[in-house]
Length: 337
Picture 1 (cartoon, rainbow, N blue to C red):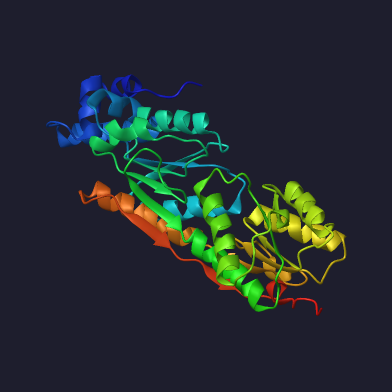
Picture 2 (cartoon, rainbow, N blue to C red):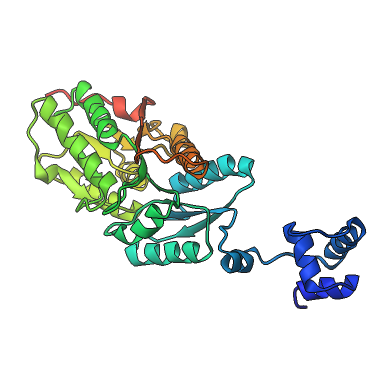
């Protein structure tokens, strides 16, 4: 069955489509009785206005905010989406979400789709290799655009990011404080993304502050769980292996936990960046540097709403702090020599 149209409503009531349009859009005088009959027909037929078509016709913006995230299945970005929606729902706005799959071209395609739909604002988690200069015209025209988790490239805009570098430094320093002098790093390399660069630099900062040399042999790449598990086993197989590991994202942490469990190694300390579901249920429970995705989402949503309300101040950068959650895996002492 086809969807009912405005013409169907007009035919049901016995008026013109223009009259129905006036009632639905509250444009121009219409008799009270006619208005009531139109709304009764709308309910009876189940008519839904085509807001997208109307907005394109009159140049209005839809009451929706577009959110571009890299991965639908990553719990971090799921929390981000829920956090944004929770804030904007109170203002009667709808959230539209699309996944870029960490692909810059797909990210730009999604943004173009949201712009064609004439969303009221954009929140974007950039992909590696993204260039946002093409959004300058929209930014100048007043469209609120906030970049989340990773800053914009080629465009001056609002950014909400975690304290990645400081958080990583805190996690590695925690391992060093428990006597570890050979701390391995498992994460995304090469560090093309802002978050990856910041966390890797935080790892190096902690070593430097402790007077420990940076050893490239203790660094291995592992973005997803399986790759991180393999990287962990490679590091443990070194002639002079690390006694502790710092994993730079939640998937890398899961891979490292899996590898240590399979190898029966309970003597290797582990601190992960990003908290995990059921981290407390692991043996030992996982010590993490926890981000605040809900807080980041709320900050981005509130910033978007303030821009929509007319805030025209300079672009702002909001740094959301991390916190070390001590549970047990990061407190495994270094072996005595």
